[in-house]
Length: 115
Image 1 (cartoon, rainbow, N blue to C red):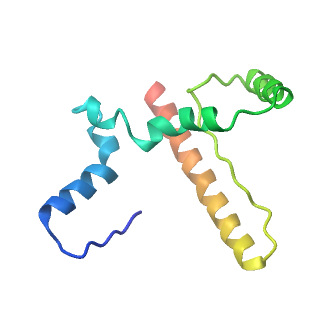
Image 2: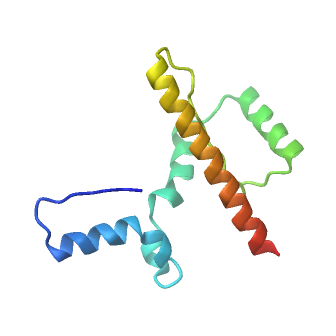
């Protein structure tokens, strides 16, 4: 959930924010609107900026093959969860738990859609 406040409540600003935050739901009706969203671009940007060394690439590809994963047909989560303080560690653990629940829900939705 996102809560955003603007200094003034002009309807143009509210419409622009709605378009940004709900853009994923418009893809069928306005394909060009969703063509440049963060979700669509982040994988490509990440691959360009952070290319793993060859030995790591081989391990990743081998693991993907073992798990039967195909590029752009799975969801992954990267979590840095080793924190030096209890408070931040607890927050990280909570976020990790939320991520796993979201992945489970997505998998269930995809499974039902395949039926």
